Length: 277
Image (tube, rainbow, N blue to C red; front, top):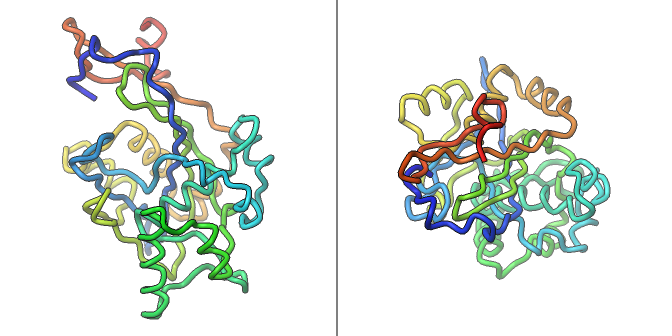
């Protein structure tokens, strides 16, 4: 964000785009790890940054045919959690779809109620093909799930935070963050298109590397890592997420220097926030 010109941006007309992100967690012998990916340096938003799988909520994520494929959460319930009139379930679906497209992880159960496992070559090849087809738009997630007899495990995802891109940015997103346990039978990997690197990392290690300038991150990513940091098992992290209830929306404000250039952001809990217009 630093270096953008205040005068070159229409502060009013930039639309808010709905977006969804999921933090995939796994246990190690001593801590939890979260899966992160580096966005391509040519990306229009957050280029080169380390992020969690996620992206825009598309119209297809709210298709009515997907409602019947979601386990344990209705659109009315999801919309109530997000405090929106309708269409809330699309945020959960978008997070699952983006995780599949970007990381190759599909949060879904088979006809036996077990999480998808990609342990054999045939399944790996089939799902890899579907991953790219869904990403390209030649195959819908709903159609693939029906073909494979799968149901989306939206009930395993916990809503943990709500971030809104500051007014003044060239692209603005209304982003909901979720946390979920990564299925043990799947191994995530970046797609080499929108993302160019990936890693499993403990929240504390990620925060330390961000502070040292080794991993570039935007403030919402850092804040969500700080949420995970005190929890050293996935069970504790999921329970902490469950206890949040409805997160308070966070709308940072841009900080400008005397020449009208963006030099950072101010968060709602910082003293200068109220004073800024």
